[in-house]
Length: 114
Image 1 (cartoon, rainbow, N blue to C red):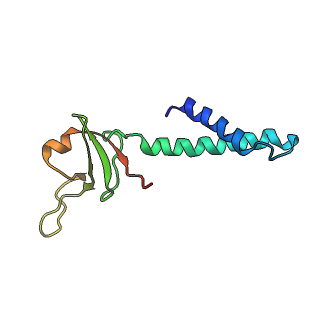
Image 2 (cartoon, one colour):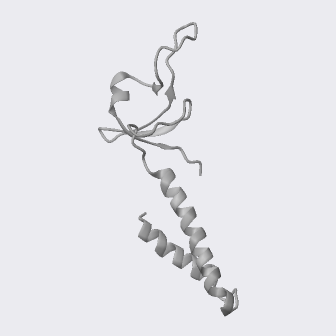
Image 3 (tube, rainbow, N blue to C red):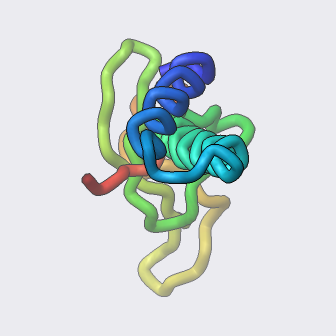
């Protein structure tokens, strides 16, 4: 869904919700507030569904996310910090999975519960 489609849906929502509810004097301000609320909610969801570039931003350690790979496939994985058997940290945080899998990740996004 594009930002323009969100704006159109916001207008439809406003017309449905505020039809015959407010007096004409309050109507313009109430319609604007309704559009702003709807648009903010839709933009929030869009941002959550957008895949992030792992070169720019990474998820928190232990947060399961959906990743997209360079061959167009999707998987669920997480970041972790590699440690030895004594708990000594061996490196920076990295994706859980094989070397090939880690290097094929081109995007990630949060898992959103319905």
